[in-house]
Length: 272
Image 1 (cartoon, rainbow, N blue to C red):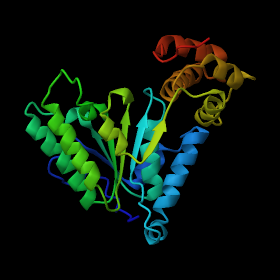
Image 2: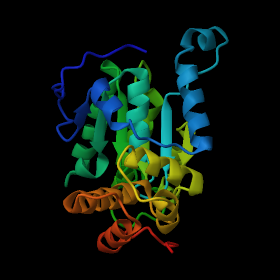
Image 3: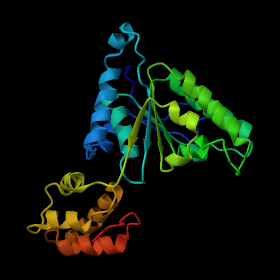
Image 4: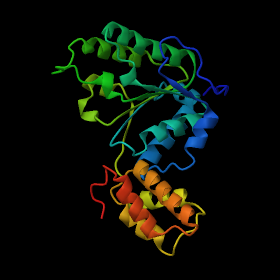
């Protein structure tokens, strides 16, 4: 993969004013505490291995995967995975929230979609399409706007023509609403869910680090935060750390319980 220069600014690219640009260094900083479930780690590692063996696969006339679709509840690691890919590939990440490019004139929306892909084809990057369902919803029984089918058709064409050194990653919380043809265009798919015990404990260890804790608080806190997403766990532990710092003492289970109650994670469906 081609390496991009890190200038810390979003390159001027007509039609993607809503995009946010992250240098490879910034991406690496964001994923210092990433925890991927075993299955997703294997998929990502294989994806990266193939990209780094491009010439060998071309010799065997086997297509190189360059499109990855991630789906699952909010806060479970989809966005961090995109940053992780960019960091490992030493490419910038261009993050586009697709709900922000929808225009009242849908012809303009389709034009914006095309400009995004044209930029990625010309400038090696990890193109991350967040809120992917905003424009990739099924063309069947779409009562909202029949004209959106034109946008979906444009997106299909862009995905078919997507080539070069860039990678396209997309994320959605509403995978069942994606158009079937869009779904088939992605050669790699990853499902995300609330972290299980091992992943939750590993993530909490990363977040707590060397912060002083009462004896046994890590195990008890992990059980207390069952059902929370990674994003929920991070915010709850940050609140708990602040409480401990104010009182100038070690982190306690009470701090975590109070922070959990104050934060009220919507995803904590099975929290004890």
